[in-house]
Figure 1 (cartoon, helix red, strand yellow):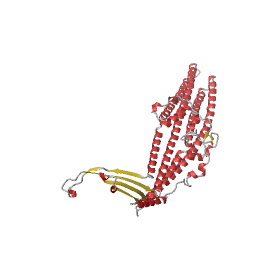
Figure 2 (cartoon, one colour; figure 1 turned 135 degrees about the vertical axis):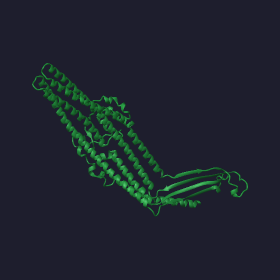
Figure 3 (cartoon, rainbow, N blue to C red; figure 1 turned 90 degrees about the vertical axis):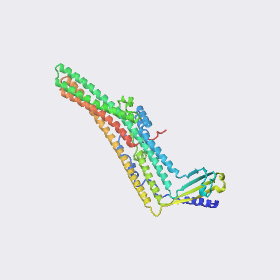
Figure 4 (tube, rainbow, N blue to C red; figure 1 turned 60 degrees about the vertical axis):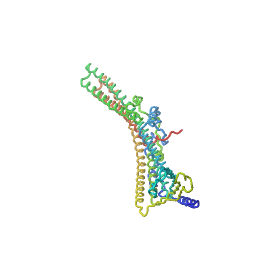
Length: 477
């Protein structure tokens, strides 16, 4: 091939590249998607009322508790949690696959060299003697470049990029979950500690009541039955302690694993916690539009849909010819002739491959890709609807538990007053023992109910923050 032919081949290849198109649908969020509905971006139905504000959720919502122990635990979980390490490894793999797809845009270069020393068969060449040894070589360079005439490579890169972004969203989702699980385990450990302290206080009060009853029996102002009933009430209160201890240990073990430690190495400071973490202000929840932008699982589902849509184009390109431009150059011959003109060779030209007339496999691949895209859209809609449901449910559950907590506190205060009055009347012989015992039992039950409600409020708060999807963002600087 002379220089003029070489130039014509190169110009033809460039012309083919200039005429390239991209087959398959261009991605955008479908108009029929749930995320495009107006009600999906509207203010939350359950966010009306005192406990909530329309302010945006901060990047690190757990700092609203102003609890340095909780802040440190979440930081440790982010640094050592096993689930986060798995998500990070999956992201690295997705980025490596993206790099592999982008390599298809670049020329491939192959080098070869095969020096040799030997001689041919004399008999095979008609000689009656051995031929002399001869040094020879064969070296070559091959460059090939696939012309992306129909956008198959562009769509493959587009799909791989969407997969990488989906993997990043999965990392963010893991961070959200780890932060919420850590805060929940911390709240449960502290709540169990608070309930244990209240239960022990009730046991102490009942112990004093048992001693007072025994003294009255000695003085002839009571009966052995009164003493047995008081002792029975004391044992009932003591029976509430072991389950609470188990709850605290379970939460501590879970907290240790979340922060990358063995269960036995749970944080000792949390084991001594006896105060449920409290929010110092109303909960900022934003609106539906902010939720759709913030929740990583929604972003992950949307990126999965984008990747599935791009793969329709990858499959559609199989219907069209693939053209690769190749350049091959080399030299072969005796080692003594290396570099001489008669030992050189080269060729330049396109390689065209096209499967005709059977396109059944390609059309089957297109149908598979379209079905995958339809499934990805359905999953995207489902994730959006589930996110809205989770948030509305969490908003309602927390608000109603606040109402319940207020009623329980009022009931506890009245029970405490009734217990004081009954004890006073009993000391002066103005009421019977059963009335006093019932008042004590009611007060203990009311105190336990208030403590349990405070524990539920703490976990309901974390559930709400988890539903809102915050905690993966970098804090504002």
